[in-house]
Image (cartoon, rainbow, N blue to C red; front, side, top):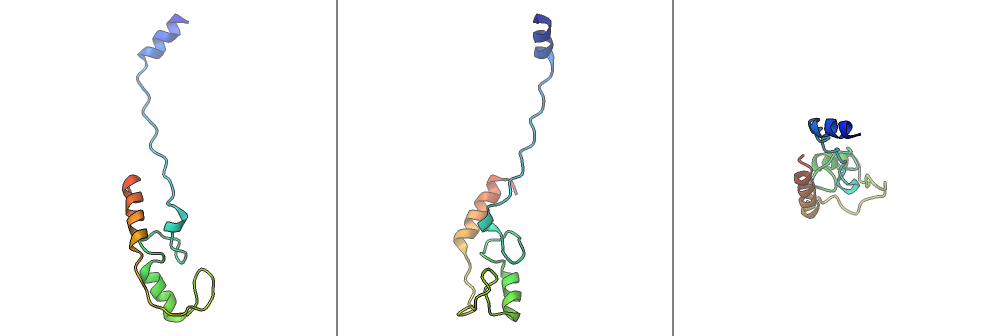
Amino acid sequence: RLEEERRVAEEPPQPEAPPREEPPPADFICPITAETDGHSYERKQIERWLATKSTSPMTGEALEHSILTPNHALRGRIREWQEAHHC
């Protein structure tokens, strides 16, 4: 037993496993392309969608208007997540 303890003490430490990649939260994902971006929809993709459709990509219901507004709060949360996860 003592010999086994000495052997274990003399073994070099094992390297730590690399951090597990964590997928981004679901509300960071563009529902059109399944890509992350700083807006509720990726701007290019929602512009392409609205060029041919007047419905919501999420619900399929008719949209009242097609005015696009950046979601800066979400973009900030995404950047914080990316920094925390070294993306």
